[in-house]
Length: 251
Ligand SMILES: [Zn+2]
Image (cartoon, rainbow, N blue to C red; front, top):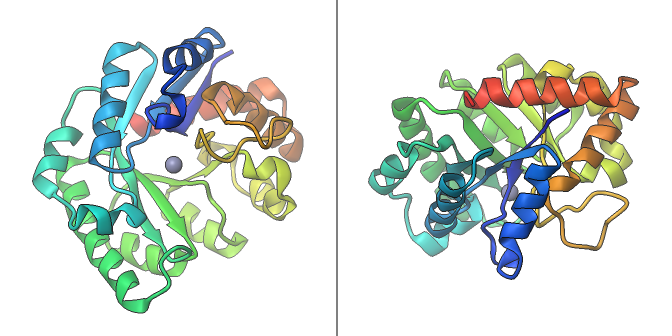
């Protein structure tokens, strides 16, 4: 049985002391992974890991809350990174109104995101979308493009989930569903064909390890929870979500 952690950050400083052990441990447990970039530095570091290990891939992106520090979205530099061999997706990119309260700052995020979507059309790689408290704006924007991708760490409503599914997007679920009941209904509703497993490690550690640092190997607990909620077998969930990840990211 194999598993895919479609969204993790082993390149983050949280793993400076034991990065190789964490990755090797996951691979030994047949957990493959995509290292998601959140800015230029972490995108480059993720690509280095992907180049070092078989079964590890990377994305390049700029998290919406990292945009002010980087001042702008540098399309040229990102285009180069996105064309590297082991880069399989563009993200995380998106909108985060939870941590950006001022309307003018939200507008700025939207402008940058549009610039990113234009680049996405050009490079033709799937999107890894971060979206918090901004789903209506997100849906309005991506609807204008014909793009594919995943809404990572989905925490919207059932209505919003339906809209993304109608657009052909995947929903990424992580440790949140092991400790927050409000997403049960959405996990039950979403077809398994549209679900990706993720950890978002080092964050959002699933039960029974909540409070500890997260790691890609823990993706198995997400598979277990989805199997329980959808009354499916653990192996069905592992198999289908692995297939989904390979299909979306062309692995
Ligand atoms: Zn993330």
